[in-house]
Image 1 (cartoon, rainbow, N blue to C red):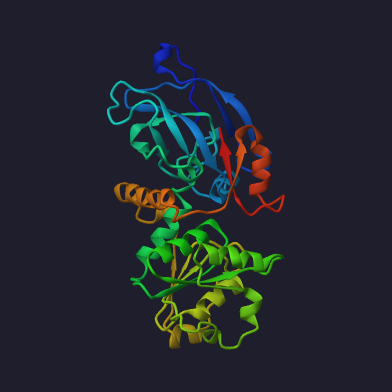
Image 2: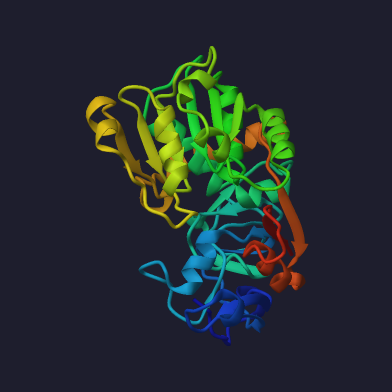
Length: 346
């Protein structure tokens, strides 16, 4: 929510901020605009953060479109994830100092602005050696990948998982996190131009096997493609439709498929035989509502950023200045053929 001007002394106020603001819910590219908002009051338990980077996530756009319940009061600033440095602190703040690198709790709208004022409890201090583009994007997609690998089945080195949407940020993280644990990954990608190049990129990240949907549709017995790789006990689905069906075909007896998205906008359909004879379990995952424990959440973030700094976790991003917000937004909406995560740099 946007704050109003106050007549408090200058020391208790933030600088004015440039922000991406929307007054109504609707198509993102028509309802959001860049505008200056006035200084905000810094209460005793608040910190003022100068934002450095913030991504444009599908969830951010869905929220602006009004697709999610319990949206913020309007007018509102978009963006639910980001990183910045402490610019100033309230009189009662003890755990932060000027210049600390911090990331904010996810799903609290307001990251798309040059300065933010929030309670200190909303922020988490991280190592200053962390690349800001990774710090700004770690809270949602990498954490989702980690939690889905951890919380539905118990896997051990030598086991395998299968996923569709392998080129997504979550998919790239799943490949690398599985590799760190000695778990094989079987990956399904869509049939697009340049699929051979995509396969090579995913294999370099650590993927064990990569197939296009058409390659799998042409095979009667999918298990024959696995070679020495064991059948997976866990499948991850963000596509739906035929993409989900292919994930299920790979699963072993008693396997679990977790759905966390539906990019094809087609339903997940499971045959009766898969339920009866393979005893398949279907689960859903939404990070925002999935048993979110803030202490554990910060531990996961620290673990993931340790991997980033060690060179064991990376994913494709495109960095654009905040002044080019609408260009970045169009790319995030797929209007220019870009499949990379768009990250705004302030």
